[in-house]
Amino acid sequence: MDRIEMMRAFREVARREAFSPAARQLGVSASALSRHIAGLEDWLGVQLFHRTTRHVRLTDAGQGYLARCSKILDSVRELEETGSDTTDKLSGTIRLTAPNFYGRHYVVPIVQDFLRCHPDMTVELILYDRVVDVVGEGFDLAVRITKPEDSSLIARSIGSTSVVHVASPDYLKQNGVPELIEDLASHACIVDQVPGYVGHWPFKTQKGLVSQRVDGRIKVNDGEMARDFAIAGFGIARLPGFFVDDAIASGEVVPVLEDIYHDEAGIYIVYPPSRFVSRSLRVLIDTIVDGLKPG
Image (cartoon, rainbow, N blue to C red; front, top):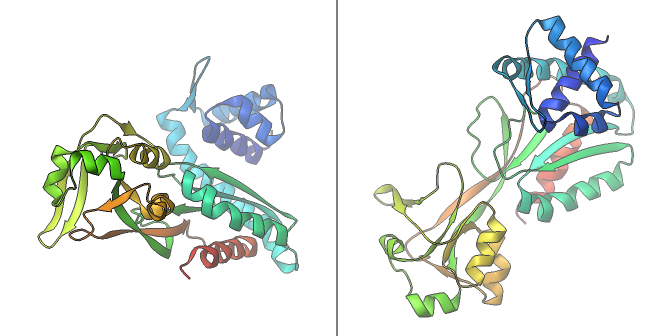
């Protein structure tokens, strides 16, 4: 049994956290995929997955093997793509991830143009509202709306977006306009369930970073929902500007605290460091950077 194929099967099951979707992606039967995984576990002498009737998740040994396996598979693909770089046409598959809303509205049109220009290319675009393990989950690059904390990745700054606080005119008429950061404690806030920020909003002030407790009846895990609840008058939402620019322009929501607070979130494209980056990946990276940069 080909060990490279076994490793590819393992990584795909780890990505999908299920056998059937992984089998469909690889174009093999579920039974063949199970044999690949069993063969790999026998070869390594460890259990890679915890299996139940509904879920598949990595064991501790599987977590450790995934990172090493991904590096090997990436190196194999680099070797396979070296020859294609000598031709004029771009070909191959690139895995890209981005946040849901930003990906749909900004990244998808750029990828569509890229695919029209390069008909032999395939792009697997996966949208997540979480920080993706780029290497461990086998992605070639990621778009992030935050400063990358993983120093092992190469990060290219594309630009930034303002961070704004908004509420509907009706809400502000009924509850008053907050004039100080501390006023948020007495307002209904639409709390985004972002890890590290649940229940408090950070503010950069002249005195340094201030953390303000916030609460409200609405707690969400999606920026579009937070915007829609703000438009509907349920409270004050804190969001990157691209979520609410149109709603502000139409008057559906009004910015608050503008005079005392201004902050921005960086937009980055990140990818694993490598001595060899395929021409197709370089072209897509440059296309995304050019398409998303301001102006």
